[in-house]
Image 1 (cartoon, rainbow, N blue to C red):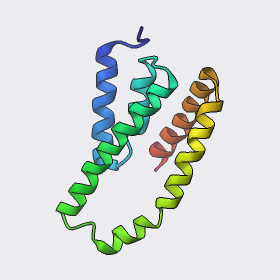
Image 2 (image 1 turned 180 degrees about the horizontal axis):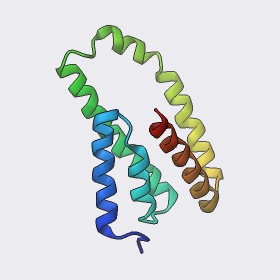
Image 3 (image 1 turned 45 degrees about the horizontal axis):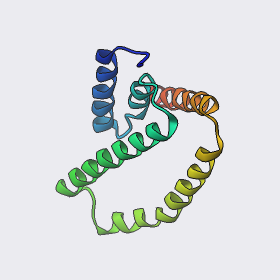
Image 4 (image 1 turned 90 degrees about the horizontal axis):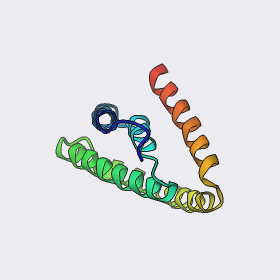
Amino acid sequence: TPSVSRARSNALLVGGGVVHGVFGTGGVLIVAALAGERMEKTRMRATLATLWLLMNLAMVANFIGHGALGVGSLGRSALLLPAVAAGGWIGDQVHRRVAERPFRIAMALVMMAAGAAQVLR
């Protein structure tokens, strides 16, 4: 059963969407909402990956629509694809080897660091 109320979880998700739209990074609030749902790590990872993919595709479409993203920028971004693929592969290997509890602890620590970085920025 969820450890947080449905209303709080929904508020965190909406807040995460707003922060993502404004700053391009609403992950801390979104992860907090999903962490309260107590879903197992594979489901949580898949949910977050899908959500962030959709949100970022919407941002890219918005950038293109406003003329803020051109061929040159897309070309430079494409140079990052090998790093993204390597990071995905490494993340998958780590994900398979880390048990549920250490995964949750590591996720909480990373999200606290990310949240602190956002506040200090």
